[in-house]
Length: 301
Image 1 (cartoon, rainbow, N blue to C red):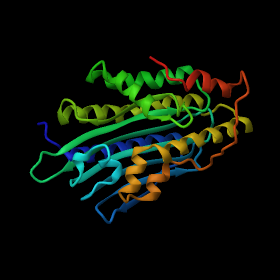
Image 2: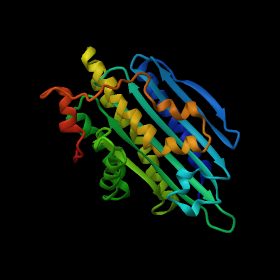
Image 3: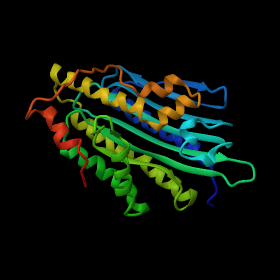
Image 4: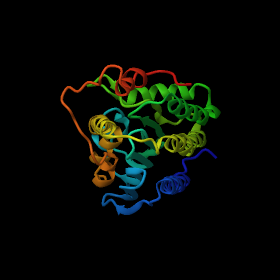
């Protein structure tokens, strides 16, 4: 069988959301609060948020399944063949903002999109990936993150990891600052290679490997002591996260333009953030090392 099976994808996404929330909740010591919601135009979701935990300052793990008759401009601008289609989109998206500046922020997303038009074959694809945004860089963390990503991709072809890694580097890039958001990871979109079963299997491999990639880093850094200097730098760097999500992120634009639930879409934003005018790190400092050694694109494995 290689037919589109949205029921199987939805079941997997529910299970993935449960698994990630359970694991992160155990790590934090607090559970996620859940809001279920419905979208008047069609569909709904489960938003789960953890705020002011022991480990997590703010984290959200969302499931959404929306459908409707008209696609927003962010979808049809680059894919004019989607005009006039009905659509169905489902996915799990998460962002974790820890308290400790030595624990990086992480983001992950896996999703399926299907468009249909009478008399035509469905247009479908998977997308997703995950990326890491450290405030203080550690070589072993970046190597572990990328090694896990590479291992998840390898069963689907030796070219998949370097391709998705490069795509991630290009996507999570703040053009107005000529600066990467973090140390990257995986990103892919419009993926339907090898048929539905293969594309779904790859997406499961990516989703399933997120905890394996992130939790060892969390456990390694969560007890590191920090002071006001490190906290100030964390809040400053979180500004980059906000800039990217509001200016460039496709999922944010699609969600807002398609009438999605605003609270769920913007839950990815950090609770506290700081902008400073023309700030520069001190030469030779750990803060400068983030810019010189970790943000420039490089091969970690």
